[in-house]
Amino acid sequence: MILGLFWSSTALLAETYVVFPAVVLGRGRWRARPHLQGDVTPTISVVVAAHDEADGIAAKIHSVLDGDYPPDLLEIVVASDGSTDETETAADVGDPRVRVLALDRVGKAKALNAATAAASGDIVVFTDANSHFAPSTLRQLVRAFADPEVGGVAGDQRYLPAGATSAESVTAHGETGYWNFDRALKVAESRSGHVIGATGALYAVRRDLVEPLPDGVTDDFTTSTGVIAAGRRLVFAADAAVYEPVSESAGAEFRRKVRVMTRGLRAVAYRRELLNPAQHGFYAYQLFNHKVLRRLMALPLLTLFVTSGASWQRGWIYRWAFAGQVAVYVPGAIALASPKSRLGRSRPFGLAGYFCMVNGAGALAAWRVLTGQRIHQWTPERVETPIPAPADGMAR
Image 1 (cartoon, one colour):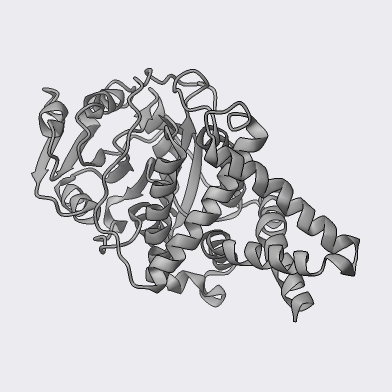
Image 2 (spheres, rainbow, N blue to C red; image 1 turned 90 degrees about the vertical axis):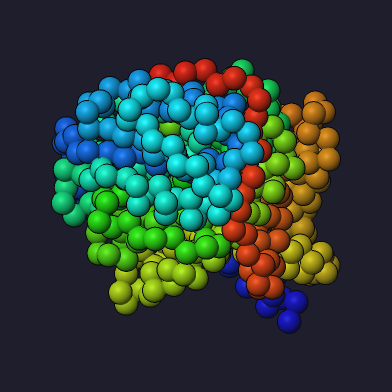
């Protein structure tokens, strides 16, 4: 039984971290399915849900307004979800293209539903309150809508270059490393079919494909995958960039990931028809690996650790498996326990700490879903470091 559990866990880990990425990258290279792109300029509604974002919402709005998109084809709708600070005042920047909805504390889903209902553009662009646009972001984002088969476009979330924020340890190394790898996968997925889903930092959907959001799910995944459920393509625009700072602390990032993963697993359950390979082919394989297996890796990791330790005397392969895990978990624990120490701030220890944190968050999120816990509201934890105006071509 121990050997069976060991090899089953090994197989799951290999599938998630080795086989799946290799298949996606290979398919993107050898099974390309290009989509049209062009210099189209549809009317755009940029939608932002905000709760207590007074410190940064004006800068966010100006980063959109100051871009090179035709001003008469652009509007911004800010839905203030029961903000207790001066968010609504700060968002009123004196431009008639900006509308501010002052809502009660209704939760992000209902806030986005209200903002979408007020939007008039042919394309609805969803973005987070702390994601800052480069000048060409919107033009690059809508280029794929020249193809009528494309129903949604995911933008590229990038982290600010070193020195723009004081975070330099677990979250800084982990977030940038994760997104660099994830970006390569998105490029390959888009080239051969669909990206799995969009990030809330930036994505766009044709107005007639936007559905009302239910409570308790991730808005970005649910709305963007509605495009695929409707039979249209969801593609990735690598040149449509928004810039964010990394989280200041591992604790804040852990809480955010637990919230996102809890809602994300519920969103997969909501879109469970997309897991049917008979209807959705290769995309069903992508979705299961990326949004289900990857978020449940804590269980096979724990199983592998226990069974490899129990099988120490059986041979070198079990000893190497156990030692390899120790070589990750010990530095990870040090980075999480002492994030400001010299070791904790180093890249190898930071990556190990981030790996441990993400899998711990996945385990807690899965437990919350199994026990019926729901998350309807969110309170952002923002860095206080001023964000420099992003420019096209900033480092990733």
